[in-house]
Image (cartoon, rainbow, N blue to C red):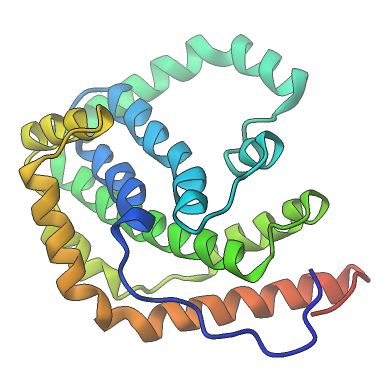
Length: 229
């Protein structure tokens, strides 16, 4: 990506089409069933890139979608994953059951997940609009910078809103089931309305997040000897 002039300000307005799957992925953490919560979270997480791209009128290649979803792990990653799967499942089952017994830990994890996925959705949208993902060969660097930006964001004003939209696990299961089948749901509609009412308060935060991404990308390209922004 080559930029010879300042980038236009990022779009920080609320658009449910951009943030729907991010919200559902975060809420999926609250499903009180081991493995089901992770499967549903992964389902909505993997839908995010193509949904965001479609909203902006982009079509992503299969290679880029695989890259965005970390799907291309290679043979050795697949082999070791299969070999260690029984041990990982036992460990995860113990952790998951403990987490469900101590539900407040799950609430904290859900708040963190919503924070993470909302920021990730915003940055994916920003990266598409600014051209960071236009060329497949530049995508690995752009995605590495995405993760670095998210890790560097330790304080987020989105936490309060995340607490406000969390609701009971049984209702979440029903709502996510409806949404996964493309059906309307009253609880999710209420969540969307609450987000729409509150979203304008976070404009400065998202603008700073975009600027942080630009800065980290610039540092990565200049450090690696690539074409600077």
